[in-house]
Image 1: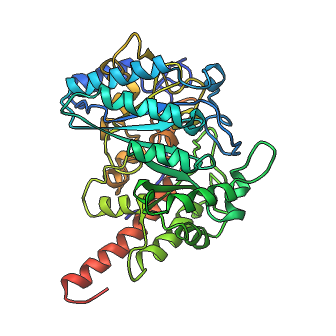
Image 2: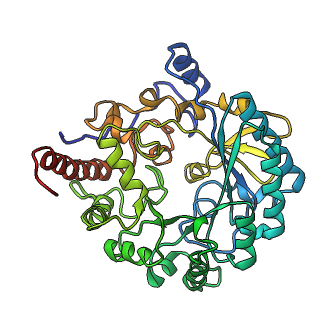
Length: 420
């Protein structure tokens, strides 16, 4: 692969538009007229049961970054709002003939609503689905409120459980703390010991770990393995060209996030047997082998997710809150609008249109289709919007190259009769 030269998109001549200038309706009209957009129905509905949180993580994109719309939202979602959201999801699934939809309880911290509300919400959502549609339910939580009663409710409705944890006690408690400064590790570890009991283990889906490149990567990975997770995902910290992640932009030739992930890849990939799935790294392997990963953060897989906030408003996925205030807003809500109307939003089109939404740097890149420009939220810059390469561009280029070389070398050995 040849070296990359990153070019940030220029604002159109004479433009006086603000931060959100791209994507806009004019751009959307062009890609629609050109036949570049083939609408992909939403299949993932993220329902924000609670807009507040019982932790105060210092990197939280919902409370600590550009967007502050959480301040205007109700704390918990009213029951009638939940019922209406469920109706809209059911109507949409029937209209598009969806055999399955994923409904993810999210927040803030969704478990703040308590087990009785979770019981109600799960019943309402399943009841609202047409006979031909299965609702796959899950919850993404910080874990500190997971107890026996909560788990019994999740078991009753077969709600999958994803938990956020940033490694061992020292690594986790550096960032994932209560407002008084106390760490959350002990509570989460206690919760995971409950989750791993036989009657609850099948609910456990994934551990999410936000990368801290100042911590030892292999130690972080192995501390997560102690909880026997079925899958782990390492999240690049949310940031962009206007609000860069820690240590970026790096000096030329330095790729701190790639080196961190490469250390984990080599440890995970070289193990005698697979100890867990690592979602980001497995997605990269799939892409370098020419198989679409189905994972929005790499490749050209169209986004098929939409969110419903506690007031019933429809939003783009909340990672965009890291860009600018109001970045997720669609000005639609479940009481007055349908999800089909949300499909028409230019930002939805931009996240489904594939190559036509990529920057000039990405268009000319050797790994364009594998990388897909990186995660959409990481491309933002205040004066040009989202039509830029990822702020992690050099790191992604290095990481894809390393993974590709190792996988291709193993394939060559296998096809020549050797063994890995």
